[in-house]
Figure 1 (cartoon, rainbow, N blue to C red):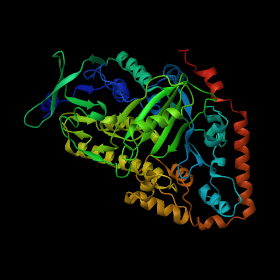
Figure 2 (figure 1 turned 60 degrees about the vertical axis):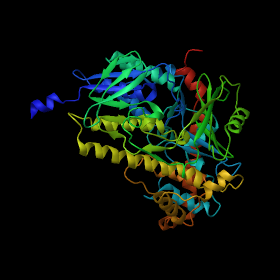
Figure 3 (figure 1 turned 90 degrees about the horizontal axis):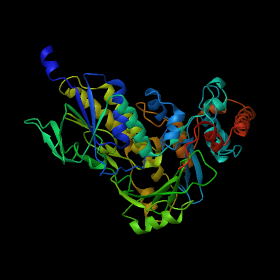
Figure 4 (figure 1 turned 120 degrees about the horizontal axis):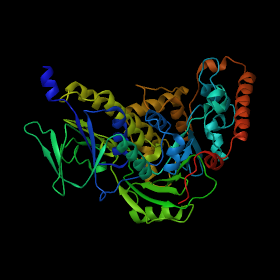
Length: 507
């Protein structure tokens, strides 16, 4: 049996497609897999990448740390900036503005989550808005940033949680260099044929336009939305979620940088979708995500170009997509990672995170020989749960609205939603309950900020919040707010922090 296992051992790994997904995967494998494993990336310069994943969530720091990447070098190389949260404009009502900040919101009192005490005071009109109790919300209002201070546990300055904005193509190039130094081979060429073995349909090799045949034991499909292996070859199937997430187009364009350099992504709702604004060191990334059912491509482009902060630096680029996921992300000897596995609009910056979690999951379940059916089933089950949980959080942004000014928002406000989301909304609207299931990506504080920001209001709160004298709670909240104010006052601006630590060469 040992000889048979050795004979069929997975040793040759072929990654189809480069870009962010391909080179993140290659970099991680290069760190883990030593000879006799061999990792090759097949990438064509003729095929462009989507490149909308310029904003991230804090988990990206774990990936970079695992690769032992110097953060300042990474930011200089990718023209990166810092991100403390996402600002939402015009979502529940035109004129509304709130921030989904990373990190803590307030401080728990007597073992009860902070928001129940805040809800008690809010219903009496005795408290400021929720964002006033988060340093990740207050600092961006003054364009302030600094890294968290681990030596200041208990202080808001120790609670700061950040992610990054960066140029996705530069990040892919940076990771390519990392991977190639560790033995990953890049093969340039356009794939024109995929060879499958009989009788099980496993992928044997890909054939390039010049006739080169690249064979492998295990293939990782990072070919983007088209899913060259997972869909075009293996026909894994796709769950289309446009009935819950109606946006299916984006038009993107970079523009010149403007000041101040804000440490947040901005998402501004329009009549049939929303516009992203992602500030980098050398430019600002912009895009308009919209529904082709409710808006033409020409109108979407006009709205985007009319709402830029600076001079456009390129022609607008149209990106069609279908929100959803593959029914099987691991099929036979192919695993799809990145947009080949599924697509979410970048409203909560989850696509790069999903690359990261797919890589982690693959490392945990990396095949020894052949493909173990129970491992494949578990991998796919975990992906299904992860995607559906993120889907529900994104759907919340559209469903929880009071806008009646366009057919698009009327559709979103009145649509049915997945049962799990409906349950979460009902729990919160009743008594402010927040639940987290199966270690889902977005925790209670994320749900709290978005639900409140989208004008969901609980009828009541936890009864234990009434046990403390009103004056005691008022003082505790006032003190929290005052400490945050003082901390923000001593922070540098993001522009000053970058200039001191990680400024990129001028381009």
